[in-house]
Length: 474
Image (cartoon, rainbow, N blue to C red; front, side):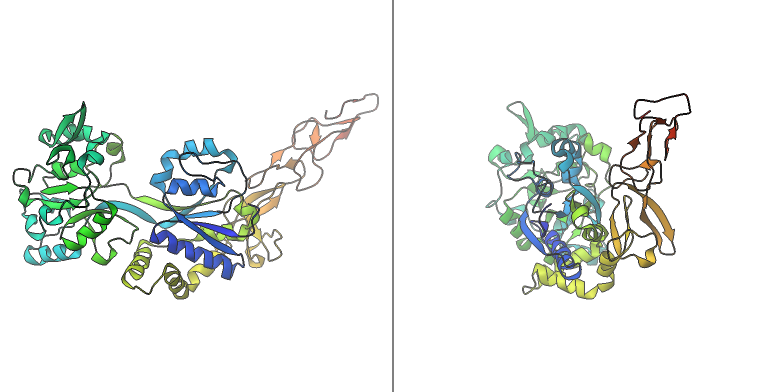
């Protein structure tokens, strides 16, 4: 946009805030571009609209300006955006943000257990509670390693009628699990059959329904299908944000959680491994396999490359591992003196080669090319300092040297043009037109008295004696 400040749209969760801090420090301290962290927002979809320059709140954002205070959104969840990309592109048109690639780590949702019951079960009988089959009631009595659902208490839990237990997805439960006793019909809709009905809080899986005192408490979204299908003695409930965050610290229990997130980092949780995700089954309403792993991505303003070409390349290069992000969250959660900024600074001090390569590298993406410190296009990496978008009149051509593959911006040859930026080839001039110099953006019409019938002409031929051509462009 028109702003000379690099605006970073951070999300409301810790991992996004920390990688946003790192991006801002590199932009300001290494590239010399003033940066600012914008107030955190709660969803990936809202972030996309902010980067597109839209104002207002979902579901009715106000769009239309080419300029935006937000130039990048760090840690956009694919699951929140991918399914709506066609709608986004149709709605935003030329304002659609540009995909700057993955961040290197994935988001993942699952059922988690704290380390204490996991360690006790492993020591007592060599039982791995991080594997879903270990909870099969026919094979193991895993209830002994956890508290009871009554220990959790109902204060802070949400009545079943206000949660996913009463939503559309429950209609698949019987067909997929055969658990007819786990549902009931209310006002013509199939809903979960909770203890106490609509105003109740707990749904008991078949493995412990006859004796709820043996149920393992799970604070969760609706995972009824897994509990019923795999004979797990689970009691499911949904809590307020406060109840969700505090109950697993007071009672040994299972909880639905996701990575990256810092809420339960101090419990050293481990995810329960279910069968690998089957997207086709999920789309059909069968949720017995694990959730799909979702790449975290960066999306940038569509003009960022034109305004800050070096910054655009740097953002595209930024990547972290899941282990690094987990470490960020541990450092933030377990040390009260740490802040998002201090965790970011410690990582930068410990990994100078990584961020220097991001910011100072010459691995240009397709549509871009090498430039020197004066921002002139160059054809060899040895004199290059960065990359820039190939402007009209040029095309992006692959260059392979001792350091690998990159791209250079080459001027279109005589007889060819390229009216658009970031293209990978030039276009031949049509019959009756010509381009008599390199790097042209439009073909010129042959003047009266001359003509050319060939494609890709750099000149026009004069009409032979005794003939004439009164019309230009022939």
